[in-house]
Image: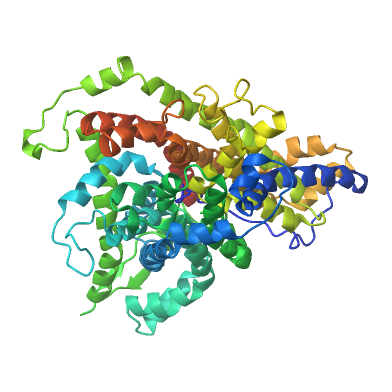
Length: 307
Length: 321
């Protein structure tokens, strides 16, 4: 599921293990490497196979599924790109993902600020309420949610062309924001708790209002956490399959991951085309992962510090 | 207008003075405007959280005692008592298979994927050449969506062109293995794919936990002549206790949420029934048995409360210490 509920994730940087003992005896490392290479090969294989298939022709695969290829081609990518109208679906994804990530970080940072920097009576309970909301399986709430989306009317025109939340980008964006909020509040709360409370008090003594304290003092300090969460939330929301599948009826409005479901019909009998399509859909998250690995690393570690 | 609001006792525990926290009562200056801003900061998100998550959760419970079909007006809903549940348990042929598949999912992730992830973490948590590359490789499946993972594994399992059958030589009509079509095989095939993804996830969680293990502990154990296994069993594993809780919670929740892979393969039917697919198939996609679908949602909710309560009670304990 996209909204993975890992409150405490961390990505250990191997190189940063400064001062760590070599716990394995040197002579054993050979065996360890053999094991790791075998495992890594096993782990890469399904993906590598999909890449390989995506460059083969249909006839070639049918004649000789596992052998060496007669020819390699990028035609599958061209066909998948055009026939499945992938650019259109990438755009749908952007329309959902960008606003959802921005708003969820904004909202979650405000809640985390209010709940961790001030001592209200119900802080812990509210924090738990938000966090638990993110831990529920989405299927528990989907039936009434589906009805709510069909019932509420009067969503104004630029946001909704049928007045409903159903079948609209705004509806998908909204449920992503609300559902992901719990995780972001949890992580940002943990992070903000490490910031000294004196920062807030000092600013208040200087006459700053709460909004100024939040936007000028706390938010800038949270930049590392926000960058890391943005990376994570991008992949969570990009990878969502469930919400858009059930809360949108027009297949051509769906973001790309949910639209994969239509692709199966389109490419039903051509596995090479399906492979190329899958790779194309996977590429953005893989690129983000490789390019921003440091963000994953730093960000995922945040949740693992004691909450 | 300024009024002085006494802050509540500091419960953050940063200083360790908790039980007698009241002694450290602090005073902060919150103007009326500040209070409004804080109220809105919490209130608006709280409203949406209640309206779109907790409201529907309660609505699921209420609807499960009705036979609403989604068409008739809400005031004509008939309350049918527990008959949805009775039918679910005694009459509906897919309930027990679905529940069993969810349990199986949990068992496989817990006792296959999790140990693999833990082993990888222990092996990679040291100065081993290329540890960063290994970590990236094992983590890579985790950044893919489960729907894509379904497609990628279909290329392995396809009866005639799939890799596995070709390697096994089982592609002829009389000996073909239909990995995804055979209702007694397909759940296992899908669980292999789920394990492929989950192990990397668990590895990452444990790598975080292992970072916090004091290296001198392991050093001391090694000097005392402990084997690698003894060091792990007696030193590393106990220290990872907090992460174990997180891993158990995450693994349980992932198992209960399982949906995407099964759905892209065959819409969660014919051997791939899961509680999640039964809910959507009964009340949204194909039929309008909303009351009945809700009763399945309630079963899923009740099961989900176990990991959620475990997690929340851990959260509470940590706030108190």
